Image (tube, rainbow, N blue to C red):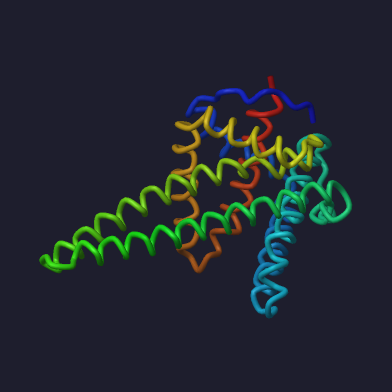
Length: 240
């Protein structure tokens, strides 16, 4: 795919990804549902493998994620679908995808450590403040500090998510290196902050509603959102 500078889209264009994602699935529901179910099964099985499972999961999921993107790219460009594309990441762009997964893991570990330090420091500060004063004042300060820490953490997690949101399709489909993929992904998301927030809220509602009938609705919702994601990448980063 021909990579372009991130373009800005409207809220209407972002919401249209959902309907267009459904159209993209026409004639290919079985392949896409099968791929998503396979990803779910692999994820579930890895959770029961001691030590190795949790360590391998982020790397395997990145490779499978790249394969899912490949499935939609084939549908979009040829009108055909191939279930074996799900495993394309194990033979195509494998090194860059693994490096991307390693970078993601490193970022989340660093954030976890920072949050841990922040919690310890906040608790220590509240303890010092409570000495020689009403204990309720210390607990109140701890509550406010916890709220502020939570808000800061939420903002940080969103910004980190922007780093990786489009990074897999960038690496898989445009031969972009992991570092540049993260930079372009962040730039694309920040440039479309409003539309991305609205689209994200609508997607969350769809996922919540899809979970109601014993999660069976996800067999309908998740393929649509996967198609919508591919189209969002295509229209923001590869179309002029």
